[in-house]
Image: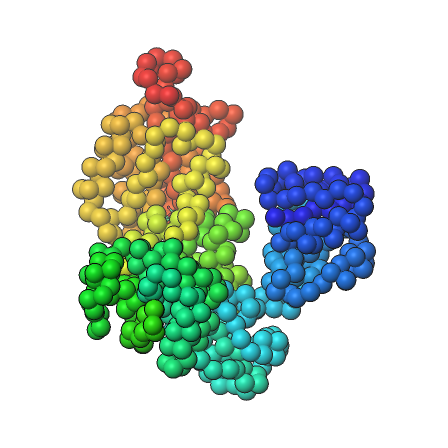
Length: 560
Ligand code: SAH
């Protein structure tokens, strides 16, 4: 919940705009500002004050506790020009909130925590627990001092701008131990602890067993991803409470599923009690991985520890047609989430400034598509966070399909949709895609021409609006006239044709022509060609395809 506090009429107006923009996310605190702020500080995760920073500093000073638990506080000035992240920039979420507030109110976000203001990944924002000298190592990263990165446990982290040598160290590890001076440990969630317990086993006993097992194996409890057990024990208090105290989720599996897992130490007791010869080992091993601690027992509990195989992350990210403001926020977030970016050099140029320092960029020239796809998947298989980028939508005549044809179920895949050329062109032309439409690529590089021709004919007969991708290149010049000719057999010569070149790029051009008048020589590879259906018309210089045929005089078809 975001608490909102204001003291003046202008502040109240801005406050109401935020409340209206974020239904259900905010709570307005009325009354004297001091009382309101004290209540909000205690009750909300984040607070926006429409008050001077000085006033807010004085009011919250006695309330400040720990940066891990205090709410993030953002101040907005009377003129609504700035949204200042005052305290709790990282942990309290004030930096992100300042940006969000800025978007709604048109205010400039002001963020002063060093790592955010220079675009370096804050070590405490990587989404995994961190231990050690965070301040000193962050400082070193900011200053560009050499920081060594030692990845003992592969995990798909965002880029950390560190190298191989240095007097400061970032270690990615699930092994026990305390970081020394100038050292930071990142704790990836790699360990699954399988647990079993007889009815009524005390939580202290379960915890002691788990902690003892980790200690003897030299593993850190902060790298526990989850506890796992059999469905029948989902409510067993000792297990549920142990997960709670360790601060990790508890997952449970059906006995039949666990019975199918091969384990080194099966036994008869759990088979009789819950229907599987192993609970702890099987529940730990069910997702694969390496058994680091085989089953061990106390009077009423069992446990086993498995290290998960490194599971990389492949984000397939569409960058949109070119303009920065047609790149989605989600695409931007995925680019910053990656430590490796794979793509065509000209697309990498489009987003290079968004990448975190330390991101490895694997760019290649035109062609080489299969190789790019293979590289991206191979990097993800090594446990890395990879973004494979493409213009428009990465799934449309682009990298998603060759990549996913290579990828196995051993990596996580995330798709981020992008504004494809047909949509970018459609918006520029007017509303050409208002009824059923199809995209056809005229490139016969990967598809025999007979197949393309059959599809064009089908589209012509079905009276579909057609967007031609890859319409014409220097070596491929007869395909477009041929395809247009096939459409002309079924559509009037006056049918509108939109020609959009470099949509949303600096040299964008938009032309409206007709089937009879279009000169194919004016079309190239940076262009899409949108051919209307029999009902499409030009209205006030724009291309419009009606949503139905019904109101179109003389056609009599029933589409709606
Ligand atoms: N994945 C891309 C398409 C790749 S195929 C997308 O979803 O948009 C390449 C073809 O897309 C080009 O030959 C051209 O026909 C079209 N194209 C891509 N970007 C374009 C743009 N900004 N303006 C016009 N056409 C574009």
